Image (cartoon, rainbow, N blue to C red):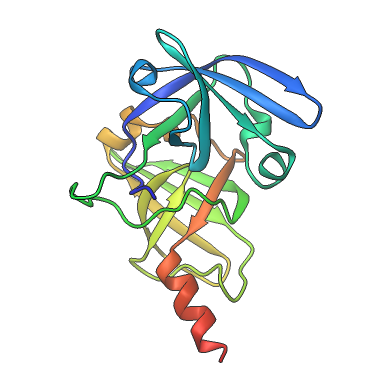
Length: 194
């Protein structure tokens, strides 16, 4: 489980295909602290660390993951949001994030707002994939508050700290992002079906 509070940005330094799998080597300030078998969120996708070196770590994304996330579009040099799993007893600053992407969607607009940024995303609504006004949404692993929530779109406001310390600054109109909808909202929606 994660909180959506990004620890650091990693950089893709190597990509290797093996059958339908993609091995990603990521360079980051936390790579040397990771352990093999540890769960780490990469752009909001929970992946298992399979190798650790001095300043890099390697993870593997299988075909199912590549089909449902934006990881398959990564190129060498791209930035990746990283967050280690939550420790029991730590502060819970974001919201409950599982690292299970519900869908990928394109950003439909980015507006600079004199010191902050307004991003708008269109999504495919379903009974479980809903966004509510002032509810939580996870975009590329970042816990954010949605507003201007409609049936199939929502906006988020980005403060300068988040803009500088995550890869949201690389998201432009047309960029594909990973979306994970609020797990509490998904459970409530499911219970309402009965």
